[in-house]
Length: 92
Image 1 (cartoon, rainbow, N blue to C red):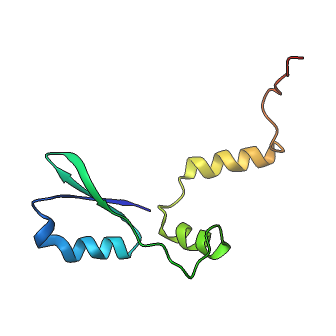
Image 2 (image 1 turned 90 degrees about the horizontal axis):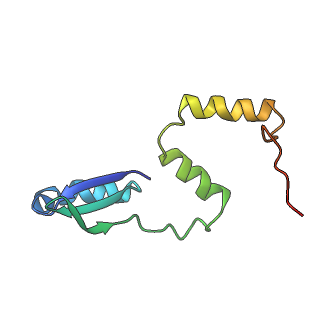
Image 3 (image 1 turned 120 degrees about the vertical axis):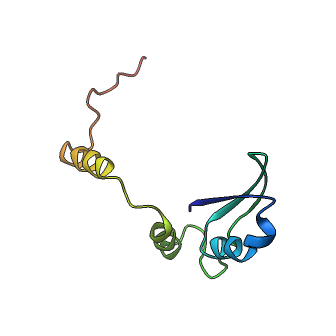
C-alpha cells in the first residue's frame, strides 16, 4: 500500500483523484499546515478472507518493487542455510 498526501484546501478540486487512489488501495492522508488531520483508507475486500493467499497476492501486486539489496540478502541467507552468523547462547 502506498500513501498519497493532499492538503485539505486542495481536497475539493482533487476529490476524484483522491477517490481513485483509495480505490487502488492507497492510503490517502489529508493534511492541514503540514500535519495529518484525516485519512481515507482502502475499503476491505469482503471477497478476500484475511490472511488468504489471494489477499497476499493482491497486496504484493500493489506493493513497490523489492529492492535488489534485499533480494541479495535473502539469497545469501538461503545459501548460508538460514543459520545465524554466530549462534546465540542461552544462559541457564
